[in-house]
Image (tube, rainbow, N blue to C red):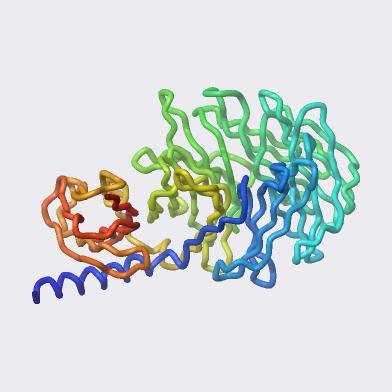
Amino acid sequence: MKKWILLFAMAVALMQFAMGQSVVFHKTYNLGPGLSANDIIHTTDGTILLTGTMDNADEINNLLVFAVDENGDSLWTKTYGGDSTMRGIKFTALSDGNYIIGNQFGVNANILKINPQGDSLWSATFPAEYGSECSGLLELENGDFIAMQRVFLLPTSTYFLRTNSEGEILWSVLSEYGETNFLTSSNEGGFIATGSNGMAMYMHSIFLEYDQDGNLITDVIYDDFEGISNGADQSPNGDFFLGGFESINYYYYANIIKTNSLGEFLWNKTYSEISPSWFITTNTYGEDTILACGFEDHKLFVVSIDGEGSLINDLIIDDYEVYFTSSAIIQDQYLYVSGYCYNWGDSDRLFLIKIDLDDFVSGIRNTTLNQQIAVFPNPVKEKLNIKIPVNQSASIHCNILDSNGKSIESWSETSPGIVQHDVSDYNPGIYFLQVINENSSITKKFIITR
Protein backbone atom coordinates (compact mmCIF):
# COMPACT_ATOMS: atom_id res chain seq x y z
CA MET A 1 0.00 0.00 0.00
CA LYS A 2 2.77 2.44 0.88
CA LYS A 3 4.54 1.57 -2.37
CA TRP A 4 1.37 2.27 -4.36
CA ILE A 5 0.87 5.60 -2.60
CA LEU A 6 4.49 6.56 -3.28
CA LEU A 7 4.19 5.66 -6.97
CA PHE A 8 0.92 7.54 -7.21
CA ALA A 9 2.44 10.63 -5.61
CA MET A 10 5.43 10.46 -7.95
CA ALA A 11 3.16 10.08 -10.97
CA VAL A 12 0.96 13.00 -9.96
CA ALA A 13 3.98 15.21 -9.29
CA LEU A 14 5.56 14.32 -12.61
CA MET A 15 2.26 14.78 -14.41
CA GLN A 16 1.78 18.25 -12.94
CA PHE A 17 5.36 19.20 -13.80
CA ALA A 18 5.25 17.92 -17.37
CA MET A 19 1.75 19.01 -18.34
CA GLY A 20 1.87 22.28 -16.41
CA GLN A 21 5.00 23.31 -18.25
CA SER A 22 3.54 24.07 -21.67
CA VAL A 23 -0.17 23.76 -22.46
CA VAL A 24 -2.21 26.53 -20.82
CA PHE A 25 -5.49 25.41 -22.40
CA HIS A 26 -6.77 23.23 -25.23
CA LYS A 27 -10.35 23.97 -26.31
CA THR A 28 -12.69 23.00 -29.13
CA TYR A 29 -15.79 24.84 -30.39
CA ASN A 30 -18.80 23.32 -32.15
CA LEU A 31 -20.33 26.42 -33.74
CA GLY A 32 -22.21 24.84 -36.64
CA PRO A 33 -21.78 22.89 -39.90
CA GLY A 34 -19.01 23.38 -42.45
CA LEU A 35 -16.48 24.76 -39.99
CA SER A 36 -12.90 25.60 -40.89
CA ALA A 37 -10.32 27.97 -39.45
CA ASN A 38 -7.62 29.47 -41.66
CA ASP A 39 -6.06 32.28 -39.62
CA ILE A 40 -5.85 33.79 -36.16
CA ILE A 41 -4.99 37.24 -34.80
CA HIS A 42 -4.62 38.81 -31.34
CA THR A 43 -6.28 42.22 -30.97
CA THR A 44 -5.05 45.15 -28.90
CA ASP A 45 -7.72 44.57 -26.22
CA GLY A 46 -6.69 40.94 -25.71
CA THR A 47 -9.40 39.36 -27.85
CA ILE A 48 -8.41 36.48 -30.14
CA LEU A 49 -10.10 36.35 -33.55
CA LEU A 50 -10.28 33.29 -35.80
CA THR A 51 -11.45 33.40 -39.42
CA GLY A 52 -12.51 30.64 -41.77
CA THR A 53 -15.89 29.30 -42.88
CA MET A 54 -19.22 28.14 -41.50
CA ASP A 55 -22.26 27.03 -43.51
CA ASN A 56 -25.44 29.08 -43.34
CA ALA A 57 -28.96 27.61 -43.23
CA ASP A 58 -28.81 27.01 -47.00
CA GLU A 59 -25.53 25.07 -46.66
CA ILE A 60 -23.54 27.86 -48.31
CA ASN A 61 -20.02 28.53 -47.04
CA ASN A 62 -19.95 31.93 -45.33
CA LEU A 63 -16.93 33.80 -43.98
CA LEU A 64 -16.64 33.25 -40.23
CA VAL A 65 -15.12 35.46 -37.55
CA PHE A 66 -15.11 33.87 -34.10
CA ALA A 67 -13.93 35.81 -31.02
CA VAL A 68 -12.65 34.37 -27.74
CA ASP A 69 -10.94 35.90 -24.73
CA GLU A 70 -7.40 35.09 -23.53
CA ASN A 71 -8.77 32.11 -21.59
CA GLY A 72 -10.31 30.67 -24.75
CA ASP A 73 -13.90 31.42 -23.66
CA SER A 74 -16.32 32.34 -26.46
CA LEU A 75 -17.26 36.01 -26.88
CA TRP A 76 -19.12 36.33 -30.18
CA THR A 77 -19.56 34.82 -33.66
CA LYS A 78 -20.27 36.65 -36.92
CA THR A 79 -20.64 35.48 -40.52
CA TYR A 80 -20.50 37.32 -43.84
CA GLY A 81 -21.49 36.46 -47.39
CA GLY A 82 -25.18 35.58 -47.21
CA ASP A 83 -26.20 33.86 -50.44
CA SER A 84 -22.65 33.94 -51.81
CA THR A 85 -19.75 31.66 -50.96
CA MET A 86 -17.20 33.53 -48.85
CA ARG A 87 -14.12 32.03 -47.20
CA GLY A 88 -11.89 33.85 -44.70
CA ILE A 89 -8.20 33.29 -45.50
CA LYS A 90 -5.88 35.84 -43.84
CA PHE A 91 -6.05 38.57 -41.17
CA THR A 92 -4.11 41.84 -41.32
CA ALA A 93 -4.04 44.34 -38.44
CA LEU A 94 -4.26 47.97 -39.60
CA SER A 95 -2.75 51.12 -38.14
CA ASP A 96 -6.22 52.60 -37.50
CA GLY A 97 -7.11 49.78 -35.09
CA ASN A 98 -9.27 47.87 -37.55
CA TYR A 99 -8.64 44.65 -39.48
CA ILE A 100 -8.77 43.38 -43.04
CA ILE A 101 -9.60 39.79 -43.91
CA GLY A 102 -8.24 38.51 -47.21
CA ASN A 103 -10.83 36.10 -48.56
CA GLN A 104 -12.51 34.39 -51.47
CA PHE A 105 -15.90 35.85 -52.45
CA GLY A 106 -17.65 33.66 -55.01
CA VAL A 107 -14.82 32.88 -57.42
CA ASN A 108 -12.93 36.14 -56.87
CA ALA A 109 -10.37 37.50 -54.42
CA ASN A 110 -11.81 39.95 -51.92
CA ILE A 111 -10.75 42.04 -48.93
CA LEU A 112 -13.17 42.78 -46.09
CA LYS A 113 -12.49 45.53 -43.54
CA ILE A 114 -13.99 45.06 -40.07
CA ASN A 115 -13.71 46.84 -36.74
CA PRO A 116 -12.61 45.03 -33.53
CA GLN A 117 -16.26 44.11 -32.83
CA GLY A 118 -16.58 42.38 -36.21
CA ASP A 119 -18.78 45.01 -37.87
CA SER A 120 -18.26 45.23 -41.64
CA LEU A 121 -16.85 48.61 -42.79
CA TRP A 122 -16.26 47.99 -46.50
CA SER A 123 -15.08 45.37 -48.97
CA ALA A 124 -13.39 45.29 -52.36
CA THR A 125 -13.33 42.52 -54.95
CA PHE A 126 -10.51 41.71 -57.39
CA PRO A 127 -11.87 39.73 -60.37
CA ALA A 128 -9.70 37.26 -62.27
CA GLU A 129 -10.14 35.17 -65.39
CA TYR A 130 -9.90 32.10 -63.21
CA GLY A 131 -10.97 31.58 -59.61
CA SER A 132 -8.82 33.34 -57.03
CA GLU A 133 -8.50 34.35 -53.38
CA CYS A 134 -6.67 37.03 -51.41
CA SER A 135 -4.06 35.07 -49.47
CA GLY A 136 -2.31 38.00 -47.79
CA LEU A 137 -2.24 41.77 -47.41
CA LEU A 138 0.32 44.36 -46.32
CA GLU A 139 -0.40 47.95 -45.22
CA LEU A 140 2.14 50.51 -46.46
CA GLU A 141 3.18 53.63 -44.55
CA ASN A 142 0.89 55.92 -46.59
CA GLY A 143 -2.18 53.71 -46.01
CA ASP A 144 -2.08 51.90 -49.36
CA PHE A 145 -2.21 48.11 -49.46
CA ILE A 146 -0.27 45.37 -51.24
CA ALA A 147 -2.53 42.35 -51.74
CA MET A 148 -1.57 38.83 -52.83
CA GLN A 149 -4.13 37.37 -55.24
CA ARG A 150 -3.69 33.61 -55.58
CA VAL A 151 -5.06 32.34 -58.90
CA PHE A 152 -6.41 28.77 -59.10
CA LEU A 153 -4.75 27.78 -62.36
CA LEU A 154 -2.18 24.98 -62.48
CA PRO A 155 0.54 25.77 -61.92
CA THR A 156 -0.84 28.27 -59.41
CA SER A 157 0.29 31.86 -59.80
CA THR A 158 0.09 35.10 -57.82
CA TYR A 159 -0.84 38.66 -58.74
CA PHE A 160 0.48 41.44 -56.52
CA LEU A 161 -1.96 44.35 -56.39
CA ARG A 162 -1.43 47.82 -55.00
CA THR A 163 -4.61 49.54 -53.84
CA ASN A 164 -5.44 52.76 -52.07
CA SER A 165 -6.83 52.79 -48.52
CA GLU A 166 -10.33 51.99 -49.85
CA GLY A 167 -9.26 48.95 -51.86
CA GLU A 168 -9.25 50.60 -55.31
CA ILE A 169 -6.58 49.02 -57.54
CA LEU A 170 -3.66 51.29 -58.50
CA TRP A 171 -1.57 48.67 -60.30
CA SER A 172 -1.10 44.92 -60.53
CA VAL A 173 1.79 42.68 -61.51
CA LEU A 174 1.82 38.95 -62.23
CA SER A 175 4.48 36.89 -60.50
CA GLU A 176 5.77 34.24 -62.88
CA TYR A 177 7.44 32.35 -60.06
CA GLY A 178 4.47 30.47 -58.63
CA GLU A 179 2.42 30.70 -55.45
CA THR A 180 3.36 32.91 -52.49
CA ASN A 181 1.96 32.62 -48.97
CA PHE A 182 3.99 35.05 -46.84
CA LEU A 183 4.18 38.83 -47.32
CA THR A 184 6.15 41.47 -45.42
CA SER A 185 7.67 44.90 -45.99
CA SER A 186 11.27 45.35 -47.14
CA ASN A 187 13.88 47.79 -45.88
CA GLU A 188 13.66 49.75 -49.14
CA GLY A 189 9.95 50.59 -48.91
CA GLY A 190 8.82 47.70 -51.07
CA PHE A 191 7.75 44.19 -50.12
CA ILE A 192 9.05 40.62 -49.85
CA ALA A 193 7.09 37.45 -50.57
CA THR A 194 8.02 33.80 -50.13
CA GLY A 195 6.38 30.62 -51.36
CA SER A 196 6.94 27.91 -53.96
CA ASN A 197 7.06 27.35 -57.70
CA GLY A 198 6.71 24.31 -59.94
CA MET A 199 4.22 21.45 -59.82
CA ALA A 200 3.73 18.13 -58.02
CA MET A 201 7.06 16.61 -56.99
CA TYR A 202 9.13 19.24 -58.81
CA MET A 203 8.67 22.25 -56.58
CA HIS A 204 11.14 24.63 -54.97
CA SER A 205 10.91 27.35 -52.34
CA ILE A 206 11.25 30.94 -53.57
CA PHE A 207 12.14 34.39 -52.20
CA LEU A 208 10.96 37.50 -54.09
CA GLU A 209 11.55 41.20 -53.40
CA TYR A 210 9.71 44.02 -55.21
CA ASP A 211 9.99 47.79 -54.98
CA GLN A 212 7.01 50.01 -54.13
CA ASP A 213 6.03 50.20 -57.81
CA GLY A 214 5.92 46.44 -58.30
CA ASN A 215 9.29 46.07 -60.04
CA LEU A 216 11.08 42.82 -59.23
CA ILE A 217 14.42 43.43 -57.46
CA THR A 218 15.42 40.01 -56.16
CA ASP A 219 14.35 36.51 -57.14
CA VAL A 220 15.88 33.47 -55.48
CA ILE A 221 14.87 29.90 -56.22
CA TYR A 222 16.28 27.36 -53.78
CA ASP A 223 16.66 24.63 -56.39
CA ASP A 224 19.37 22.56 -54.71
CA PHE A 225 16.56 20.55 -53.12
CA GLU A 226 12.92 19.86 -53.96
CA GLY A 227 10.14 20.95 -51.66
CA ILE A 228 7.82 23.81 -50.79
CA SER A 229 7.47 26.61 -48.25
CA ASN A 230 4.06 26.61 -46.55
CA GLY A 231 4.73 29.49 -44.20
CA ALA A 232 7.51 31.82 -43.15
CA ASP A 233 8.47 34.48 -40.64
CA GLN A 234 11.19 37.10 -40.20
CA SER A 235 13.21 37.35 -37.01
CA PRO A 236 14.03 40.72 -35.38
CA ASN A 237 17.56 40.60 -36.85
CA GLY A 238 16.15 40.35 -40.38
CA ASP A 239 16.75 36.66 -41.11
CA PHE A 240 13.95 34.65 -42.71
CA PHE A 241 12.82 31.14 -41.79
CA LEU A 242 10.80 29.26 -44.42
CA GLY A 243 8.97 26.19 -43.13
CA GLY A 244 7.51 23.41 -45.25
CA PHE A 245 8.80 20.10 -46.52
CA GLU A 246 11.66 18.68 -48.54
CA SER A 247 11.03 15.83 -50.95
CA ILE A 248 13.70 13.12 -50.83
CA ASN A 249 13.20 9.99 -52.94
CA TYR A 250 9.46 10.73 -53.11
CA TYR A 251 9.12 10.99 -49.33
CA TYR A 252 8.26 14.24 -47.54
CA TYR A 253 10.27 15.45 -44.55
CA ALA A 254 9.55 18.56 -42.50
CA ASN A 255 12.18 21.21 -43.14
CA ILE A 256 13.25 24.79 -42.38
CA ILE A 257 15.24 27.05 -44.72
CA LYS A 258 17.11 29.99 -43.20
CA THR A 259 18.10 33.02 -45.30
CA ASN A 260 19.42 36.47 -44.53
CA SER A 261 17.38 39.62 -45.18
CA LEU A 262 18.38 39.55 -48.87
CA GLY A 263 17.21 35.99 -49.38
CA GLU A 264 20.76 34.63 -49.47
CA PHE A 265 20.76 30.98 -48.43
CA LEU A 266 22.22 30.20 -44.97
CA TRP A 267 21.09 26.63 -44.26
CA ASN A 268 18.43 24.00 -44.86
CA LYS A 269 17.57 21.52 -42.10
CA THR A 270 15.41 18.44 -42.62
CA TYR A 271 13.79 16.70 -39.65
CA SER A 272 13.39 13.08 -40.70
CA GLU A 273 13.38 11.89 -37.09
CA ILE A 274 10.07 13.58 -36.22
CA SER A 275 6.57 13.80 -37.57
CA PRO A 276 4.86 15.54 -39.31
CA SER A 277 6.01 15.26 -42.93
CA TRP A 278 5.76 19.03 -43.29
CA PHE A 279 5.36 22.21 -41.30
CA ILE A 280 2.20 24.26 -41.92
CA THR A 281 3.08 27.30 -39.81
CA THR A 282 6.39 28.94 -38.92
CA ASN A 283 6.80 31.67 -36.28
CA THR A 284 9.89 33.28 -34.76
CA TYR A 285 10.19 33.87 -31.02
CA GLY A 286 12.88 36.32 -29.96
CA GLU A 287 16.13 36.41 -31.92
CA ASP A 288 16.89 32.73 -32.33
CA THR A 289 13.90 30.44 -31.75
CA ILE A 290 11.48 29.07 -34.33
CA LEU A 291 8.09 27.53 -33.55
CA ALA A 292 6.73 25.25 -36.27
CA CYS A 293 3.40 23.38 -36.35
CA GLY A 294 1.93 20.62 -38.47
CA PHE A 295 -0.37 17.62 -38.41
CA GLU A 296 -0.24 13.99 -39.47
CA ASP A 297 -1.94 10.69 -38.54
CA HIS A 298 -4.64 12.62 -36.61
CA LYS A 299 -1.97 14.18 -34.39
CA LEU A 300 -1.07 17.85 -33.92
CA PHE A 301 2.65 18.65 -33.64
CA VAL A 302 4.37 21.74 -32.24
CA VAL A 303 8.16 21.93 -32.46
CA SER A 304 10.64 24.50 -31.11
CA ILE A 305 13.94 24.91 -32.99
CA ASP A 306 16.94 27.12 -32.26
CA GLY A 307 18.52 29.60 -34.68
CA GLU A 308 20.91 26.98 -36.04
CA GLY A 309 18.18 24.46 -36.73
CA SER A 310 18.61 22.14 -33.74
CA LEU A 311 15.47 20.76 -32.10
CA ILE A 312 14.73 22.13 -28.62
CA ASN A 313 11.41 20.56 -27.73
CA ASP A 314 8.28 19.06 -29.23
CA LEU A 315 4.67 18.66 -28.20
CA ILE A 316 2.20 16.16 -29.62
CA ILE A 317 -1.56 16.40 -29.13
CA ASP A 318 -2.97 12.90 -29.63
CA ASP A 319 -6.42 12.51 -28.09
CA TYR A 320 -8.39 10.57 -30.67
CA GLU A 321 -9.25 13.67 -32.68
CA VAL A 322 -8.28 14.32 -36.31
CA TYR A 323 -6.47 17.65 -36.49
CA PHE A 324 -5.97 20.08 -39.37
CA THR A 325 -3.60 22.82 -38.28
CA SER A 326 -3.95 26.10 -40.14
CA SER A 327 -2.32 28.99 -38.30
CA ALA A 328 -0.38 30.11 -35.25
CA ILE A 329 0.52 33.44 -33.66
CA ILE A 330 2.77 34.52 -30.82
CA GLN A 331 1.58 37.07 -28.28
CA ASP A 332 3.83 37.91 -25.33
CA GLN A 333 5.21 34.55 -24.16
CA TYR A 334 2.33 32.46 -25.58
CA LEU A 335 1.84 30.55 -28.80
CA TYR A 336 -1.76 30.19 -30.00
CA VAL A 337 -2.36 27.35 -32.48
CA SER A 338 -5.67 27.08 -34.32
CA GLY A 339 -7.41 25.01 -36.96
CA TYR A 340 -10.25 22.55 -37.05
CA CYS A 341 -10.70 18.97 -35.92
CA TYR A 342 -13.26 16.22 -35.80
CA ASN A 343 -13.88 12.88 -34.18
CA TRP A 344 -15.15 10.09 -36.43
CA GLY A 345 -18.91 10.47 -36.73
CA ASP A 346 -18.99 13.94 -35.17
CA SER A 347 -19.23 17.36 -36.81
CA ASP A 348 -16.22 19.58 -37.41
CA ARG A 349 -15.10 21.83 -34.59
CA LEU A 350 -12.62 24.65 -34.30
CA PHE A 351 -9.75 24.21 -31.88
CA LEU A 352 -7.49 26.64 -30.07
CA ILE A 353 -4.43 25.69 -28.04
CA LYS A 354 -2.43 28.11 -25.88
CA ILE A 355 1.17 27.16 -25.10
CA ASP A 356 3.51 28.85 -22.60
CA LEU A 357 6.71 29.37 -24.59
CA ASP A 358 8.92 30.29 -21.64
CA ASP A 359 8.52 26.70 -20.49
CA PHE A 360 8.29 25.08 -23.92
CA VAL A 361 11.44 26.50 -25.51
CA SER A 362 13.53 25.61 -22.47
CA GLY A 363 12.08 22.12 -22.09
CA ILE A 364 13.83 18.79 -22.58
CA ARG A 365 12.88 16.90 -25.73
CA ASN A 366 11.69 13.34 -25.52
CA THR A 367 10.51 12.58 -29.03
CA THR A 368 10.97 8.85 -28.49
CA LEU A 369 8.33 8.81 -25.77
CA ASN A 370 5.95 11.02 -27.75
CA GLN A 371 6.15 9.07 -30.98
CA GLN A 372 6.44 5.46 -29.83
CA ILE A 373 3.98 5.11 -26.96
CA ALA A 374 0.80 3.53 -28.35
CA VAL A 375 -2.46 2.17 -26.92
CA PHE A 376 -4.70 -0.40 -28.63
CA PRO A 377 -7.30 -1.63 -29.32
CA ASN A 378 -9.31 1.56 -29.19
CA PRO A 379 -12.20 1.24 -28.38
CA VAL A 380 -11.36 -1.52 -25.88
CA LYS A 381 -13.55 -3.98 -23.96
CA GLU A 382 -11.33 -5.79 -21.43
CA LYS A 383 -7.56 -5.63 -22.08
CA LEU A 384 -5.82 -2.37 -22.99
CA ASN A 385 -2.43 -2.89 -24.66
CA ILE A 386 0.22 -0.26 -23.97
CA LYS A 387 3.30 -0.26 -26.20
CA ILE A 388 6.44 0.91 -24.39
CA PRO A 389 9.48 1.49 -26.66
CA VAL A 390 12.46 -0.75 -26.13
CA ASN A 391 14.83 2.21 -25.80
CA GLN A 392 12.96 3.63 -22.80
CA SER A 393 15.30 2.52 -20.04
CA ALA A 394 13.92 4.82 -17.34
CA SER A 395 10.86 3.94 -15.29
CA ILE A 396 7.58 5.00 -16.89
CA HIS A 397 4.58 5.97 -14.77
CA CYS A 398 1.03 5.38 -16.02
CA ASN A 399 -2.06 7.19 -14.78
CA ILE A 400 -5.65 6.59 -15.93
CA LEU A 401 -8.08 9.52 -15.66
CA ASP A 402 -11.82 9.62 -16.19
CA SER A 403 -13.52 12.12 -18.51
CA ASN A 404 -13.53 14.71 -15.70
CA GLY A 405 -9.77 14.44 -15.16
CA LYS A 406 -10.07 12.46 -11.92
CA SER A 407 -7.33 9.89 -11.34
CA ILE A 408 -8.69 6.32 -11.37
CA GLU A 409 -5.55 4.21 -11.21
CA SER A 410 -1.76 4.68 -11.24
CA TRP A 411 1.18 2.31 -11.58
CA SER A 412 4.77 2.08 -12.82
CA GLU A 413 6.34 0.07 -15.66
CA THR A 414 10.04 -0.71 -16.01
CA SER A 415 10.02 -3.34 -18.78
CA PRO A 416 9.68 -2.32 -22.44
CA GLY A 417 7.36 -4.07 -24.87
CA ILE A 418 3.59 -4.62 -24.89
CA VAL A 419 1.96 -4.28 -21.48
CA GLN A 420 -1.62 -5.48 -20.96
CA HIS A 421 -3.80 -3.65 -18.49
CA ASP A 422 -7.16 -4.99 -17.34
CA VAL A 423 -9.99 -2.46 -17.68
CA SER A 424 -12.86 -4.95 -17.48
CA ASP A 425 -14.03 -3.48 -14.15
CA TYR A 426 -14.29 0.04 -15.60
CA ASN A 427 -17.64 1.47 -16.66
CA PRO A 428 -18.08 2.16 -20.40
CA GLY A 429 -17.04 5.67 -21.38
CA ILE A 430 -14.14 7.96 -22.25
CA TYR A 431 -10.85 7.70 -20.36
CA PHE A 432 -7.33 9.10 -20.66
CA LEU A 433 -4.03 7.30 -20.20
CA GLN A 434 -1.13 9.53 -19.15
CA VAL A 435 2.33 8.08 -19.69
CA ILE A 436 5.03 9.98 -17.82
CA ASN A 437 8.79 9.70 -17.57
CA GLU A 438 11.31 11.97 -15.90
CA ASN A 439 11.34 14.50 -18.73
CA SER A 440 7.95 14.59 -20.42
CA SER A 441 4.39 13.35 -20.57
CA ILE A 442 1.95 12.26 -23.25
CA THR A 443 -1.80 11.70 -22.93
CA LYS A 444 -3.77 9.14 -24.97
CA LYS A 445 -7.55 9.09 -25.12
CA PHE A 446 -9.29 5.70 -25.19
CA ILE A 447 -12.88 4.49 -25.09
CA ILE A 448 -14.27 1.50 -23.19
CA THR A 449 -17.27 -0.29 -24.72
CA ARG A 450 -19.21 -3.42 -23.77
